[in-house]
Image 1 (cartoon, rainbow, N blue to C red):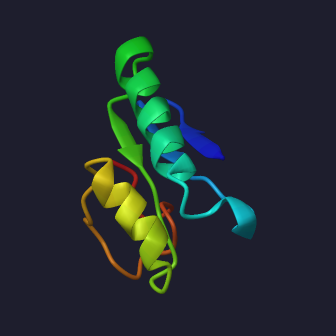
Image 2: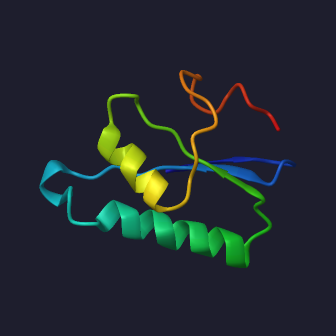
Length: 82
């Protein structure tokens, strides 16, 4: 899943796995590959992602891929234009 904000060079990414595929490193590897591709082959400057507060596994995947928490309780990415 992704959402691109034209003119800002900003994209929001995410992934979802069936239960039987969780805990196998698939999400971490997918996010890593997406981030690498965006940094190396596009003009994207900002990559965002969001999780539900109770989804600690997704937050762990993002931290593993060097994402940092910049807002908590925000309505997805819609309130942060720049």
